[in-house]
Image (tube, rainbow, N blue to C red; front, side):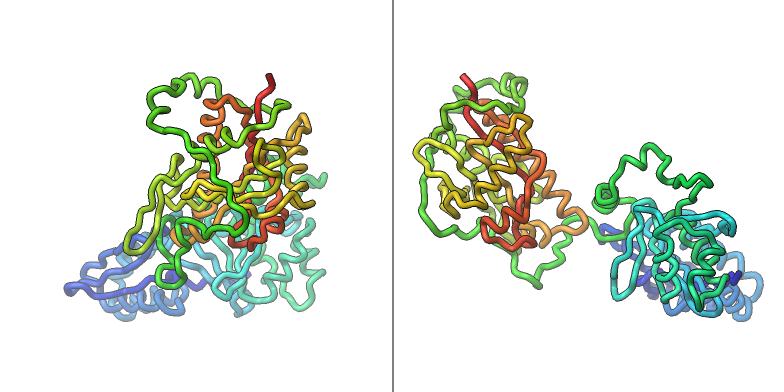
Length: 474
């Protein structure tokens, strides 16, 4: 088996001289810049780091360069720094088979040096169900939420092997199935997949080792991938409020443009009076619960108005040089307040049935659509999510204007939206409890159906949460 491994720095790493001292510049996932001082850097070692900043070289080539330029005495210093770079996750390794690059291992986090061991040529293996291919920076990349590295596929041989590993295969079977590929390349690629935790052993009785781990088998692919990507520790993407589209794409306004159609002004409660006379907070908190049995008396327009005002109105608009934010009764990541409120009214006193958009600044409902078949389908889906199969009197749909968050945040944008939905749900629960109404958050909804009913772009604004609001049984 070919042992050729070409070392190189991660993209974006640079060397520069500062005050007669060389420093290495690199960036973390939070966009913070880091430097490593390289005091008294000799010419040979400096040339080795410059090679790593370029196309790279093998460990032997780099050590030979240092030895020929500086002498044997500088090799320990070279190896010390190289090991530190590897532990920091700054070194990529390109593995070759038969003289041609096969795949590149790119570390995603700080970790010990990547260790390669040979897989058994007699054992059958299958690709991990968590591994996935995607295009990134004009390269085909294999990743997995189980792994702390990504594997860049550099030629067709890797893709061919992956295609066959959708079912259990041994090393010898892969060699027979794929013409034009050497046994060395198959062995090398399997070794890389195994080291990157993207390969799972198949037992003689057909059991996949990965599927015998109780904690792991209970994760669905999309859930574990989402978990690994919105938390730091298993990726190198920038995280947080990076303003990545500043001066590139105009920011959406804090308040969505008013939906045309008939306007209904809603009742506004006296907040100052409520501060003095409202139910005690502890009582409300302790009595809060989901209620799935609804009363026969329709909820009133006054109750709906007070509910929306106390839960979801805009209290203030905040403008800075770069952005427009708002203040509302519930918390929102970065004060973005991307959630739009739509009320699907099945029955409500003095308000005709239909789908309405809530304007939180003017405290008004704007008719989006009468009770069409699509609106009825939204209500029916909500009823299907109720064990009692009761259709809610009012279905409140939270839709996210995604660019309000993605304009600011990287990696955690969608996770932040879902957290905001949770904050809104709790706020609505508490207000509904105070008003003696029947509230119930709904576990799932049809975002495509919502986008069709409202006429929004699925990728720009679609539903992310549903909440039933009804009168209580007598």
